[in-house]
Structure formats: C-alpha cells, structure tokens
Image (cartoon, rainbow over the protein chains, first blue to last red):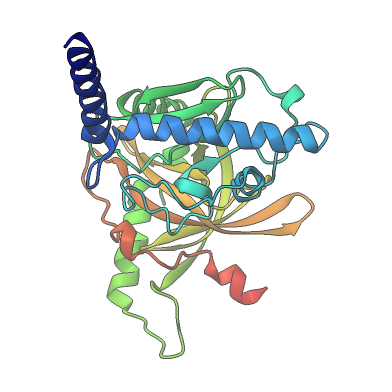
Amino acid sequence: MASFWRITIATLLVVFVLYKIFDNIGPGRCIHDDEMSGIRLHYVDDAVCLYAGQHDDRLPDNLKVAVAALGFDSDVNQCPPSRTHGAKLQNPAGFMYLGAGWHIKDMANEQIIACEPFSTSAANKNETIVVLRADSHVESIPISEIEKRIHDAAIRATNPAKIATSRP
Amino acid sequence: MELTAELFSKSLLTLESQAAYFPNEQRFAPRSAMDVQATIIPLTATSGLGTSEVAVRDLSRAGVGFLIDRPMRLDEQFALVLPQLGDAPAVILCEVAFWQPVDASSYAIGGRFIRILKDTTQGLHLEPSELALESAGAAWRESA
C-alpha cells in the first residue's frame, strides 16, 4: 500500500513538472521573449568562444559561421518567429553582431558582442534589449534608458551655431 | 552646411512634389542628391554613445546615403541627428542596408529609416520601415 502512494505521489510530481514546462514552452506558447533571447545569446556566446578558440582568439566575421561551428541551424528557435524582422537580417536569430574583427583579449569586459536590434521592441518603452557582453554576461537594458542616452548624445552633438550655418 | 530637420523635411517635400518617376527605375523611393554634413550616433559603440560626422550624398523617403571614414556593418543601427532651430534635435533610427568602400578612408553607406525616435515638432514624415525595401544608398551599388 505504501509503495502505491509513493508511486502515485511521484507520478503526480512528474505530471506537475511536465505541466509547468509545457505551460511555458508548449505549442503556441513561448518562454518570455527576454528569457528566450538570453538563452539564444548564451548559445551565441558558446559559438563565438568556440570559434575564437579555434582561430587564434579571433571572433568570427559573422554569427552564421560561429553558430554553424556548433552544429546548429542558425535560423531555428526563433520564438516567436516573426518577432523581429529577422528575415531581413543576415545574422542568426536576428541579433546585431558587433564582434567582427575583434580578438577576445583586446575586448573590455563590458563590450557588447551581440544584442537585439533596437527596433525589435521599441513600441513599448517598458521593454528591454538583451545584450551579450564580452565577459559572457547577458543583460537586459531598458529601451527607455537607451533612448535617453541617444537623446542626450544628440543634444550634445548639436548647438545653435551649427543650425544657424545651415540657414540661408 | 548641416542637414537640419527643416532641410530634411523640405527635401522630402520636394521629392514628393516632383513625383519624378522613371520607368526603368527599380528603386523603391526616388532620391534627392545632397552635399551636406550630418551627425550620426552609432548604436554599436562599446563605451558610451559617441557621434560621427558624415557627408550626406542623397536622401529619399526610405533612407539616406552618406560617406563616413569608417566601415559600418550590414544591419548596424545608428541614429541620425537632425538639429532643429530653438528645439531639441530630431532623431531618426536607421540601419545599414548597404555599404561599400570608396577609398582607403572613406565608405559609402546606405541607411534605411526604421522609425522616428524623437521629433517634438512632428514635422518629419517617413515611409513605414516595412515598405522601405530600397535605401537611398542604392545609388552607389548601381554606380559600382
């Protein structure tokens, strides 16, 4: 009798765990976008590090080469598939890749290797852009923060004297 | 001369009014030749957002073509800064649709407009990004 209850409880636990998993990633559903982007960026990190290890510390010229080295199809695991204009991008999973031409030893820890394109989720100011840094750290940056930095840089770049010279 | 929001809007209005359509033209949007300076903010900077001065060569409702002294990657994003008189500058988010080295220290870039990041005067009107299949920089591709 005791073994019956043990089996029943174990079965219920397995069912519960499976339910939680499929509740998140089952058909028609996705892990939260940021989480999925983070997971994909960790794959990217593995890929570029593997590539660099095989090529004198040099990062690949593009992500397709690096991801292919891992044996993955670079276009799979888009979630949702139409989230970005990935079809137009030539990088796997629609990421903007910034590592081309760099050697890992020359990069600062905070330097960005790959990130989501800025336009991906900018419709909602509360959303974030997920970035992969050179120290393998994956981080979400609020879009509102990036926009503020851009606006600050734009204001610094302009001044009345410049505008005046462009007027007839 | 600097590419301002005013000059930008005027140029696009001129393009509209001209309605210059050539049957052999496969370009999505007609463009206007220019020779002005502009400021861009590459969004791929690793240590803070810096600015770069570029020489704008042409402009269309879909994008902007310019010369810059460093290579830019395909799909690299940048912000085009358009000063406005007495107001904060307008900012347009763009991405590189085309690039080509011109000489050792000059690169021709075709940038596609993505969306307006800031325009307090609401004076800028662009094509929706999904329709902007052809950037102004296609001129260099054709002439290459």
